[in-house]
Length: 483
Image (cartoon, rainbow, N blue to C red; front, side, top):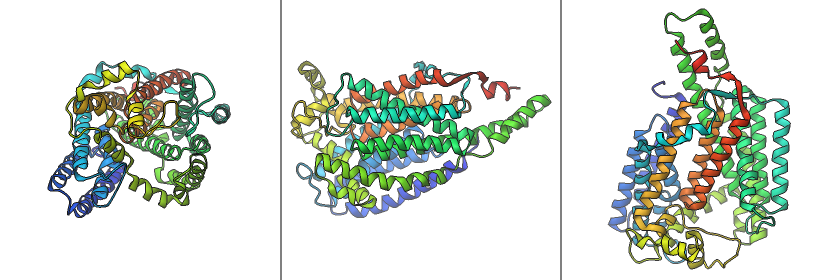
């Protein structure tokens, strides 16, 4: 593998520049707050900076990704809240912000420890994808089937209110059907994109069209996040396809330089080298999405405001939406509400999860009811923030253990990505969906539903991998790069 891929290095440098700019800016924001908050926030930034320096070869390595997402969910808005008169179910003061920093540091350390524990080799994660075989190529017939599947899933979800904001579904087993018609169709569309990147521009465009179709369904169902989530997933697919194209070329070049190779093997390797010369152009394709996103976002905001009321100002424009989203500080405010339930931080919270199990209530429903006044049976949820759920369940210990286990799982998936990179695009899709789920596991909720989501995605990937594996195509590294 090359010392550092060109694209990875450029994006890493941009991230690092913005990171150091924020360090300087946040110091000014925190002047006038408590000394404890300033010191602890400095420790948090220092630790996060060390992590980013550690994984400079791939900024979206699990621990680097967690650091960036954790910053977006909490670290970015803590100085903004501390320096202003921010009110959310009461004043969020410096004491609460200090507790929030302690919790997110605990979750970050737990996740990183999980990523360094080699337990993932005992997990049968590699069996989820077909090892040693390429996926079938996208064809005209498959393209038509893909379009029909996305249209069918969108019509059914809208008709039966599956995943609609603030509305109860009207069919039984709605959760299972929702997993199939949203996550399953999303996997199919992402596979079209990942496989299309290996074949040509028209198939790449087809994959983007299918994902935009899913985003359009989310708009009709009143979800703003569906558009942002689509962009995040597409970005990761482009990123890792580009990164792994670079590594594949380096591997082929190294093989061609080896002595005593037969002419036929060299000829086959050079032919494949020609097909791998052009890696996907990330910026060009994402520009198409950034043209569509503002239009979709405005429409989604209007639909949501008409259905649920409030937040109508979000539909005035994308920049206004971004400004208000940052100011709302969703991850921090949700976690603050959880920490306000007790006067002090608790190490285990007396393992309150056992009491909730006896009562037949989930942690999310407990917080929705006790903090936000959501009534039983009401189709609405606010949630706990990612670390808030494990904290309610078992205190600081619960936060550490929960994210440690999540880190073990992410390490396992990432190892599979590195092993299977040059023969199966679905592995990239799998990791992209896991990366997307991490956003929710920090800013929204990390609970049983998160585990169900990751499990459901893995099962759907397992099934789909058997459907699209090409039994006649052998692994390139075994057929053409062996000595």
